[in-house]
Image (cartoon, rainbow over all chains, first blue to last red; front, top):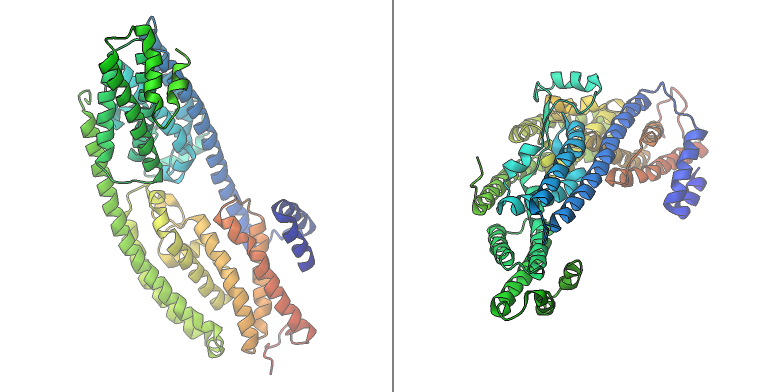
Length: 297
Length: 232
């Protein structure tokens, strides 16, 4: 047996899997042993947990994709004939994400410790917050609050006919007696979503300037400054935040440069040439955002 | 209601959230540190089993370490009171390691007492925690399993030392035990995580104890059924 094992060591991981399968077939497990019986239960429990995790990862990916689409849609508001209709469309899409994507997530998490699976869906949540807060900014020119995010993610009753055993279990649990469920948005996820929002705002500001709008860049610039000041009031949270802070600083710098250029040369340049000027003025920055954000104008 | 919430308030709320969390984490850290100390003491106590005279006095050792779990239960109750409902996994990383070590110690103790595998329920009871998360502060399944893998490693060492101490009975029992543990773990579909990595080490433990049994067998030292197992 040890011979077999050492051979397996050399073939690496792939070989190991084959090896295990073979071994399992070679030596059928003794199902009467209490140890084996206990491990069969563990197997079920682990599989359930892993499957749930996988399902949540998939749902999270769907949420990310949909949220990105909403963000693209919202960017089309620059120079649009009818901005209100774009906002309406975005709202409708956001509602769809809430009802068809978040609701199943909430159902998976019913009666679970939400923190156990949070890593599976945090990416989707952050992207969604980015989309939602972008929508709020365009509509109301202000920052969304965590309560407002949370409010939309509160569901009553199951989405479709759900297995009753889950329900039975919840009766014994001390959580909520009724069918209501919600998705926990942690303050950290909320903040990370807002940090992502600043990137979109930067793009919005530059695009608007390129489209000849001379007000939006300035109001966005002020708004970004408020956010940056807000982020500066607390220390380094984690690696993720400090990375985003670096991006935020860069975004802000681009917008500030753009505003400066608009202020100083805006009156002397015809509107249709502003885009070119801005692209050269901001090129000095460390990034190449100017080209890719102005291409679609 | 929050139509007028200015951005600064949003950040202020977040800041106070961070501060509250920091504070709670600090409190948890203090209790976990005490718990780690207790775990170390129990481990030190049980380490004596690897020594010549320790093996002969297993029951005394077990009794003493068993009573030390009183402190563990006390400290874990203290810890569990600090954790808000349904937030076990928010802070899990703080105590994951010490719980794994404690469930190893519980399993080791159980093996020394009765040569049996400790059940998840018994581990939870000995530590003063729950099996089902709906009942309160629980013993995470993966932490319990991790404790069992540490046990197999410790038993492989004990097999060597028991031969040295002149006990040829124990290695045979250990080989059977670790073999069974191995077939149990083979049933699990593990992800590519720390448990899986640890499980990959189980086969070496098994190999080690099987080799000891082999050594005993070819020298005719392997005890027959009913024999005492003493070399002399």
